[in-house]
Image (cartoon, rainbow, N blue to C red):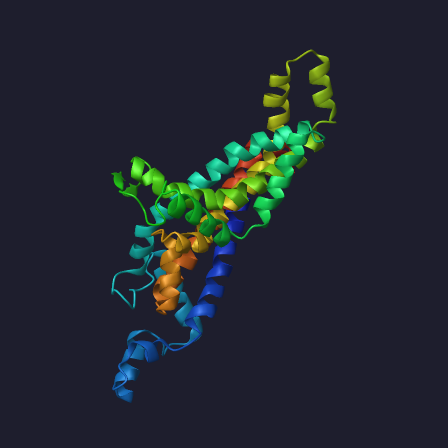
Amino acid sequence: MLLTILHRLLQTVLVVLVMSALVFAGLYLVGDPVAMLASPEASDAQRELLRQSLGLDLPLWQQYFIFLGKAAQLDFGNSFLTGEPAMRLILERMPATLELATLAMLSSMLIGVPLGIYAGLKPQSVSARSIMTGSVLGFSLPNFWVGLMLIMLFAVMLGWFPAGGRGPVQWVGPIQLSIFSWQGLQSLALPVATIATAKCALIIRVTRAATRECLPQDYIKYARAKGLRDRRVLGVHLLKNILIPIVTIGGLEYGQVIAFAVVTETVFSWPGMGKLLIDSIITLDRPVVVAYLMLTVVFLAGLNLLVDIAYTLLDPRVRLGGAA
């Protein structure tokens, strides 16, 4: 078990290093920050002084190692627009994105897993076919279109929910959350539903496929032959064995929601990291973009590590394979 975790941890570190090199090459070597920061009236001597202060006169390999050293200290420079540390701006927006992504994935799991199991148990029933048809539709619709339709229906026509923004927040330790107020939950409803529409559809399809695969297995037949109740057969023997694909998809999709909630946050003016990323790209605020990308890389790599560890807890064969 320990060797498996150490092996996965080493792989995670290597992935982060490779991605840091790609981020450095993709952003730090493209364009000239001096042309953006220097005044149009600046002389060549002033531009050269600014270049030296930014370390752009150093060899590329030295610039990269300086970048790594500062990244290890969460120092990605100051925002070109506000002058505040870029990482501070990202961390201030992170609770909003985590709140949105967590509620969306929890909703998807709570709805998708039972519906997927039901569709797998009774694949020929009308209700099961309706569930699968709905999952295809939910998986196919673009997020921005779903968000706009929800705004049009529930915010504009019915007036049940606000069309955008975040509700009042409360401090919970070092972070601010909006889920502890009715206005906050109302503001979360439409963006959560937008994200959950596609994710729930995917969870339904994965759960149904895993259920159909497990039902003919001998351990299910043996459990039923022993006279166990269907609730125990489904809740213990079936559910335990379909958790691997569900954990896989759930973990990967949770990371994708956090990293790529840009469209949903933009449609609903949700003050999260994705909205900040779009604003930073528009204003060419490179330190904020770099800080966002590196934080996202580390988060996704760490999430994959947690999924791998969950494998070892759910399936002993993973531990045995790693030990071998």
